[in-house]
Amino acid sequence: MRKIGKQLITIQLIDNYCAWLVGCEKSEKTIQKYRYHLIQFMKYLDWRPVTKERVLIWKKYLRGHYAPISVNGALTALNGLFQFCNWKDCMVRFLKIGKASFCQESRELSKEEYVRLVEAAAQKGNERLALVIQTICASGIRISELAYISVEAVQRGRAEVECKGRVRTVLLTKNLCIILQQYAMRKGITEGAIFRTRNGKALDRSNIWREMKALGAAACVERDKIFPHNLRHLFARTYYEAEKDLSKLADILGHQDINTTRIYTMESGNRHRQQLEKLGLLVTSYNRLSLLL
Picture 1 (cartoon, one colour):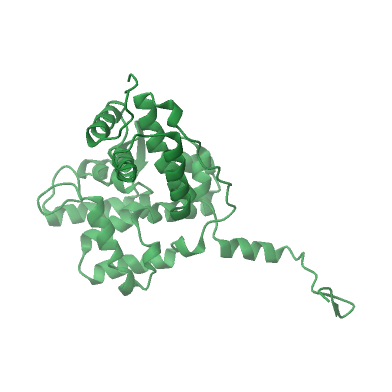
Picture 2 (cartoon, rainbow, N blue to C red):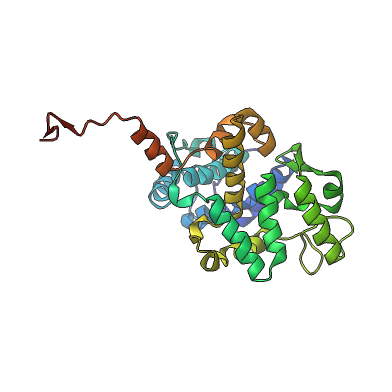
């Protein structure tokens, strides 16, 4: 796109950029995120033109309020728009993020907690939610890919999932297929997506998120651990612990970069600490005198 004289961000410009992203086959979720960040930046500018100095001030604000990975997500949206408008003089560098050797224990969902979430959903009479949780965790799919779990897919024992411009085959276990077939029969669902709203539309991610969060108290699970993507992480950790095949896991999860898969298999800080303690490299005393004295 040719350079626009007055570098102003408007709703119309954001809409044009998002429409262009659709043509670039960006996912709906990605476009929604970009739009959110761009609107926040537009509000900050308050009709002032975009300058490199103002972008750097915004970047500094983001660094003080959000995690580095979230900051880089916002900067990706901004830089993309600047490139679209040929405002390349306003583009800024991303934050350099060091690789962590373990994940945050407070965010890691254990298998025991997962079981309690399923049981809590069942006890509340929410069979659909109990099955959604199990389907995501047993197959490793993204929440956005749930619509591909159809009657036809269950009959075949596999789902052809399209995400981020790639199509991959997701195998469904025999027991999962039996459970989902029985559920579909009880609900009178003979074709298409199995998980639907009362109006017959594919289940929305926001509904699933909200319903899962509501299980926290009954399941005795911290709310910060309860979100659909954490089920995918649990699947990845469980698979890797059993098979130790990172390359195969990357294929199953649909990752183009195996380094992304490494993040999913990261152990918690507690497990990492236990491994360090097993090394036996700490000398607590020598000749009955503490070495710390």
